[in-house]
Length: 414
Image 1 (cartoon, rainbow, N blue to C red):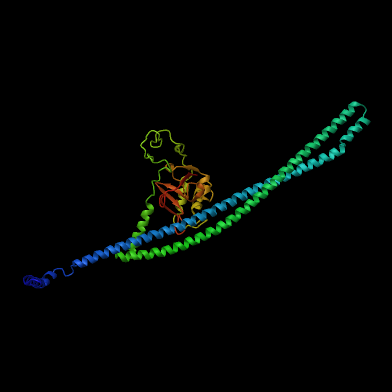
Image 2: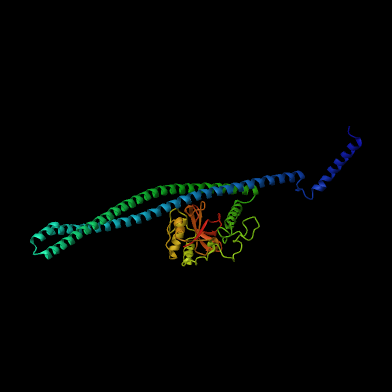
């Protein structure tokens, strides 16, 4: 049972509060209540959680776009490699056909010489001449002379026969080699057609993915703007700045070697057997003096910079659109060096170096695994940890951090 005294006190308190309420409310009528503050905080927490979720979706969209672009880049470089193989096999075919023609001409010469030797031998009568010499000669001296002449004719006949047989064998081998080279060229052409169709399909898929991801990201940026109560323009600027900062942040220092850069990779504290920590002792074979900076590097860089902003297009090598190896090949052509339009071959014809040996004009490569044959992207190093490259479908030629994506796998100097 409630106490009368307590009830009277509560009533008085309520009446007093009611009487004082206008006086308290007048100075700040918009002041939120405790409940309103709590609800606002809950809404902020929910909104923050929602914004984080949207940011995760944006990151996932970027990752999906990157994956589609990598697939397209790989397919494009496979096609570039197939085109390069066609050119190489066509060159080999032309060389083999020329060798076959030369061998056939040599065979014709030997055939003519052999025919002449047969006629000479027939006219000489060979062994019959020896018999006639015994019968008709005026003595042993004439017989011996005729026998010697017959022997010389026989030797010449046999020599011409051997030379003809050898020339015929060379001609047959050259014809076989030419036929094999032609077959290789046809096979390379068929492979290139398949690779072209695959690259075209992957490029089309990457373009479609880029369009879809662009629309999705636009919708997600609108969602961020709504959740945070800011304009779409501000939200878009912030997202662009975030992605630019992520691209500018290197995945690893560009001057670190590919391997052996950690002074103490082995947790066991044994300083004696480990030769790698101190750069002053006798270096490893990889630490041999770096090759001299390539001549023409500045011209190559200047050419590549002149293409900044031009679109990526698979298989392109200018003059107004590029793929990765097309850009580096054409840039280095301006620097006086001939490179194949194929990233794997560009590495093969260049001098491998370590990341710590990078100089402006060098090439940096990305691949799958530890084999250079897996390379599918190449860029031109410009110095200060930056590169120029044709990144992918939807991104133009750009200059950015060498670690814009992930640490390169290989380095080489043209």
